[in-house]
Length: 103
Image (tube, rainbow, N blue to C red; front, side, top):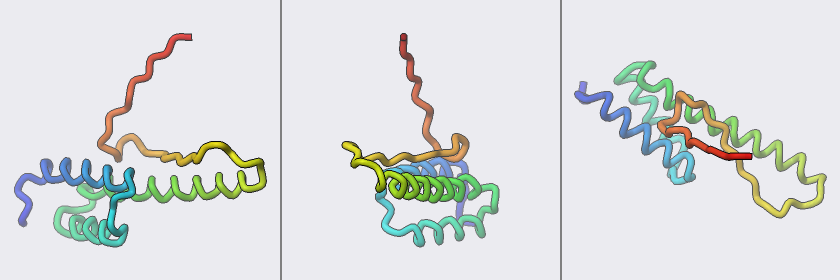
C-alpha cells in the first residue's frame, strides 16, 4: 500500500541490514525480525526471503564459531581471535572480491 518503489526500498534496506548484521550494529535482532515480519505482511514472502536468509546465515555462523571455540578450548591458546561468517551468495548485497595470486 505505502511502498511505491519496492525494488528501490528493498535494495536500500537490504544493504543497510547487511551492514548492521555484519558489523554487529543492530540494536535488537527482535526489532529487525519484527520489521521483516511487517514487510512480509505488506509485500509478501518473495520480498523478505533474502532478508530472512541473512538472519539464518548469521545464526549458522554464530553456532559454527561457538563449536570452534569449544573445540579449541582443549588446545593450546591461539594467538588470534578468529570469527568467521559463512554467507549465502544470493542473500547478501555484496559483490565477491576478486583475488588474484601468482604462485
